[in-house]
Image (cartoon, rainbow, N blue to C red; front, side, top):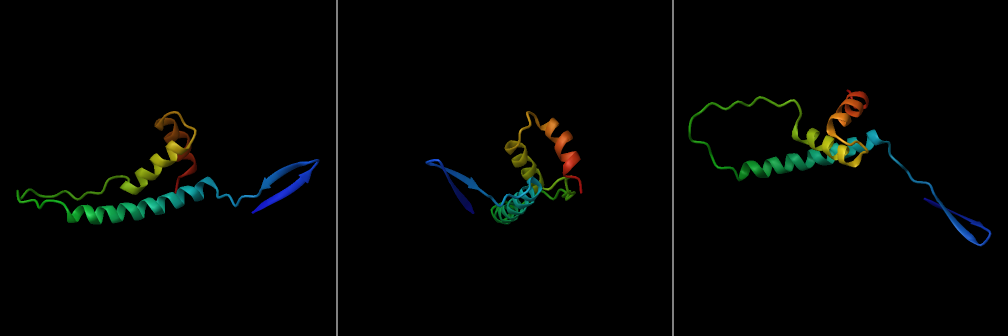
Length: 98
């Protein structure tokens, strides 16, 4: 939605944007990233070579899933932080707790 204001031969454009909060943007990025990771993993498994060595598989889950880690990296690169440690301690641990 854009509003136009005419003032002394100059046209000033005031835009009213439907802005989302940063937390809503991160949630949107997470859902898109999660959909991509699920589709990618499905295709990746189809093209893997089979294992025939007989060693036991350890299927323990990591602390973060791939889509959560990618979302944090996207948020870090889109933000104003200089290093990931500062981003993790001062933004993720403070504002993105469950």
